[in-house]
Length: 117
Image (cartoon, rainbow, N blue to C red; front, side):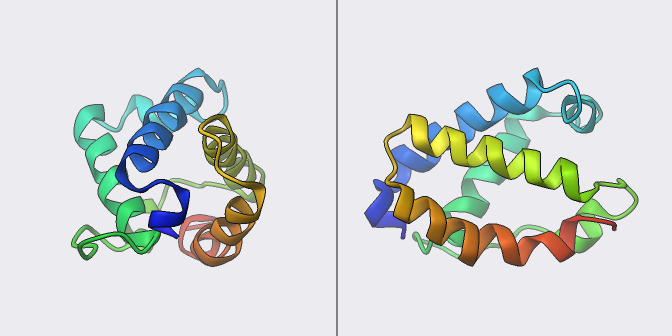
């Protein structure tokens, strides 16, 4: 998937656009207000999505469930978060078929590790 969507430039652009959207979202911005160093978090997102999209390297960051434990993220918030990610990909010209694959292979499997933890 990584090469099909445009590789690192697309992942980097997606993360930048995603953060712009998340920080402007009245519901989701609160999760990032206490995140600390947002530049470090952006780097972690770049690393995660590079590996999640079958790019180079391996994910060496924390497991998703413990990172999201106690945050109280609900299904609606997760759906909105995913919609922001997909909108960022669309802005970058990623084909809808690739967006559907990302939803099925990356975002949907993450849900139980993030929602309700």
